Image 1 (cartoon, one colour):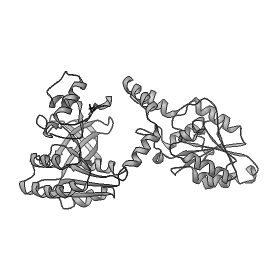
Image 2 (cartoon, rainbow, N blue to C red):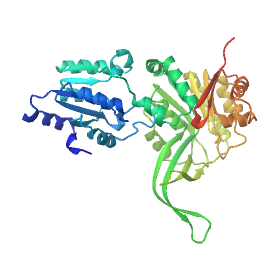
Image 3 (cartoon, helix red, strand yellow):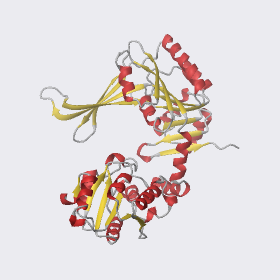
Image 4 (cartoon, helix red, strand yellow):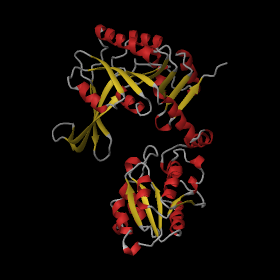
Length: 435
């Protein structure tokens, strides 16, 4: 890494550029993620450098990169290392902001250069480029987009690095032509004022990272040395935290164990727009699933589950029904995630399906409920999400095509929308058309 090129803050960089050495130099500024450096980037920097005396490149720090799962592929430090090796780049700095607006205000570059993909306002779904252009011009600079051949790090990542099969790549290509990013953003704008009711078991997921020592000297057992553990909200609580980023308010109905501190712990981990409604299940812990993970291979060694899988008692069932009676009237959208750990009795399932305005269902098999926990317990749902293996077990069919099974499940559950997940192969959707 050429550390002489890299500045720890934009303020220090500005002072350096204000020195007598660079007083009358023309400053060119390029900003981006620059995750996977390719030939397009090399040409982009070379062309940009010709507009002035010095090329300053700023990169977005890891926590503000929003390009999907697995991005950035390279860390801030790694990206700086690669860029510092380019002869066309004079100085580097990290932007610890979501946009480069602050850096533009401080640097006040003579030229701010973007690639061809930012030449049209329609291609910028965030609207940030228009704001950046105005800001550059307000600071006395000029905004320029280059006209060279367009290369995309994201396209390269999706096509070459991300583990997608042929049908997934084909589908994404069709989808990209049918639906724009702006369409997707508009959809999320529509749903952001939605209040959603979530019903399901709360789970605490614990991961214990360990050094595997090997076989014990005298016993046929594996010995491990735990050195770090992490705890996360799982089950319906994890779903709530994810959805709360898109919806105005989330209400969760669940059960917890008898631990006095658990509600406080869970609320501290939930996002602020989530309301927790629960009953305490007698003689039970809050469900905790602990996995011991090998430090080297990152593979799970063993799972230890603290669960009371018995159904909730009649009195607990009645208390939950009273909570649901109030909440179902308040919410148009209801999502049930049934992990089969004793929360959703037949009585409650019947009550939920009868009184929900729009109901989405997901059930999950696991080692403690395999063989009897099926999605067919629900006789009616607007939307159903199920894993292919669970669907085949439910319909007792190892060989039928997914299309036929989706139609059978749609009829069985009076559901017009079926989503079938297939692990690394992605997911399939089935929609029953109205005649």
